[in-house]
Each structure stands twice: as structure tokens, then as C-alpha cells.
Length: 196
Image (cartoon, rainbow, N blue to C red; front, side, top):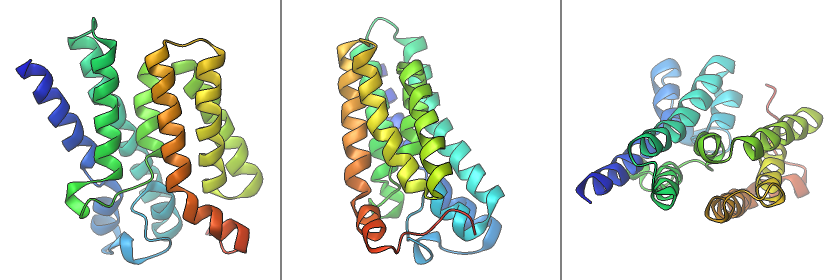
């Protein structure tokens, strides 16, 4: 029991590390929350600081979603519900990080890291949807929302374990809700494009 509590706490802590904020601060000397969309995620870092900081942020955000779930499935393979909880705590840590006043990113990259472990094929389909959506529109937000829709659809269509499919639905809904400001900007024609 103690081991599980430690894993959950560490999952939140790792997820809460604000990769984008740290990278923008260290490489460009700026507070990413004060520029662009104000979001400390990979998309805003990419637009504001350039390709290298943007890709580094995406890499570390994916990694901090992947590592806790991989560790959990290795250490406690007999408990899929617990592994799901570890993934959820990591995403919660990223979205509501204690290091930035409980205001974090939108959870797309970190969710991808979690889902690579739990739902590899639906995640592959969601990644393809992201690339197509972002590539065709030049809006990362559209790619992210496309992935958020495709992930649960594919999870249920492939009859993934019900707890994992439920998680995919919760992830998709959370991402869409956190993209409501993006939807409003898209409707008004004011959404930022990812190419500088």
C-alpha cells in the first residue's frame, strides 16, 4: 500500500514539473506565461521560442507521462486500475502543476506519453490525426483536438479494456475542454499558427 501511495505522489510530482516554463526560462530567459497564448505547453514554446525549445518541451512532456506508467506497469503489473490511476495523476500534475500556481498545460503531450503505455494502437491513430489536423490547418490546436476525438473512438472501436477506454474518453474530454479558448480564437480568426 505504501509503495502505491509513493508511486501516485511521484507521478503527480513528475507530471507537475513545468518543462515548457523551465526550457523557455533557461534557453531564452523569458517567462513563457507572459507571451503568445500564455500557455506553458510545447505549442506556445515552439511559437515563441523556436523549434528546438518547442521540440524539447514536447519530448520532456511526453517522457514525464510515459515513465511513471511504464514504471507502474513493471512494478505492479497485476493492477491495471492502479496503472490507470498513475497515468491520471501524471496528467493532473501537468495540467494543474503546483509549481505554477496550479495552472499548467493542456495535457496533450503528457497524455500521449501515458497512452503509449496503456493504449498503443489508439495512440498511434490519434498521433496520425494530430499530424494531419495540424499539417492541413497550420494550427496545433486543431491537431490536438482531432487527436482528442480520435483517441477514445479508436479505443472503444478496438475494444480496449474498458477502464483504459474510459480513461481515453476522460483524456479526450479534458483536452477539448481546455481548448475552449482556442475554439473561440479559431472562430474569431485570431488563433495563432504554429509556424513563426
